[in-house]
Length: 222
Ligand SMILES: Cc1cc2nc3c(=O)[nH]c(=O)nc-3n(C[C@H](O)[C@H](O)[C@H](O)COP(=O)(O)O)c2cc1C
Image (cartoon, rainbow, N blue to C red; front, side, top):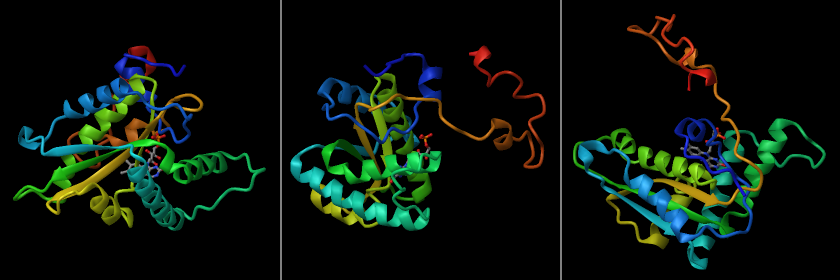
């Protein structure tokens, strides 16, 4: 049984992307909690101009599979990624193998398409800021329940028009993102990130965080 946790620090620091799933379906109650968490997210002016579309019929899964295949072609080029040799056990090979497995099996899983209505005056980036917190809440709620998830680009690239058409997303709604969910094969683990100090400044772009960070980011301080 995947480890559920309601410790928010543990959840955030171990909500690693999961790309390998068992065949067990995600039950409605678990998925509904993820969707509720998404809807608790902030949005500009509290507009909540979002719609989350669960894709789980055979027809929509087939469309998702095609969108995933198209995204994979772009990802392979962008990251110079290719299918690893079977006997390559390097971290890169293992990561790439998981990425291929996710994309190859895309049609087998439940996923959620996140859409955001275009609003007058707001830039695309600002509108993104009103929907990505919902996606992050969804990811954290998935992790908290022991569910695995992967945010994908499948509603971008060649998949955007495919999914827009299949789902019937109106032209004035943006295809913001797409998350695959399932019960993980394997375990959640700590996220790998660069040291915090390299991303923080005080008062000025060139000013290092000096003592600010202290022990606050260490496990002991939690
Ligand atoms: C906007 C966005 C798009 C992503 N698209 C894909 C994707 O198409 N396929 C995929 O396997 N992972 C995708 N990811 C997952 C990232 O690769 C992953 O979050 C990142 O490598 C960090 O890994 P971690 O979550 O395990 O720490 C995407 C993540 C984001 C934020």
